[in-house]
Image (cartoon, rainbow, N blue to C red; front, side, top):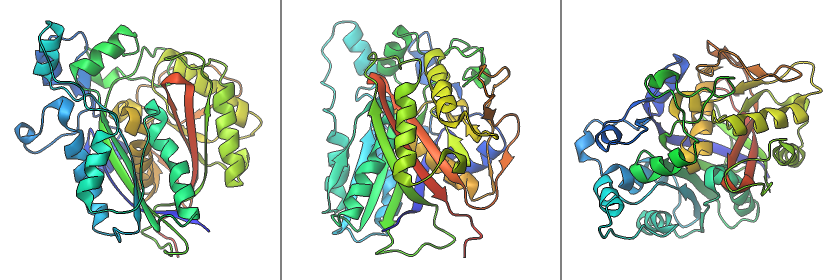
Length: 394
């Protein structure tokens, strides 16, 4: 049984899918000053926020998850038999608006945060689906980790199709203050365009982003791929190094084991990987651990695979970062190229030298074997291997 991504729906700080692809392939940045963060007087006030034609009609920044999940999932619901479709979601972001947060800071009563999984359950209840519902909250590895769950459901026949996705938005005082105290955020906020610098020796931290994405997945028993199909899913894996709550184990051993396991399950060798979509946060520890792991797995290759780091453009979309970055990558590949890493001036030292995509988009024709990495707090690591399907497929 073969598994496919039939289509995708997604939003980034550039906007919906078409605008996101166009801006990414023009090497633009969605990171900018955020008005409500500036108005709150926070020490950090930049990010990549999903634009909306009427910003005033949106819920408060801390309460946008239900809105964007619905907007993202709704187009895919129109394509499925709702009695035979599973929903798999990872939704993050605080549930307070700015005023509620500020009241709590000053010791005034505020409503409790919504329990984990409540938004996913609400979406499921309102969708008319009667297949399985699976949620995942393994920090920034969460949405990528869902691929293993979707594979199991489809192979076991518990669902004919799966809608897999996620949303996250930490552009809210509750999210910003926590990351700021951890010293995880970029320090060059005076110029938002250069603040996020994955794999650069001058990197200082990540920049939060807001994003939402969903995939419609099916098996070969119920679907035959064509030129509109995005990718074939070959295998996925997860590990946990449990080093510290917030920092990865710097040698990258557990991350490398996750990549190796995904490759083994996919039946793919390191020499067959055409493209790595990195986690690439721009934090000192994470980038070092990831480059160490990539070197462990791919160091014997004569020609290193190209590496992307989309957070340099769209910020760190938290629990949704895996699906958002993968959706943008697959959509760009339909255009025959992938975007460069922004602000990568002096790459991290490694032996052999890693092949970061820099300065201009990289043309890539034909099917591409892709490794997507996602890592989260608590040492949680998840990888998925896919083969893209070009628009010239026949």
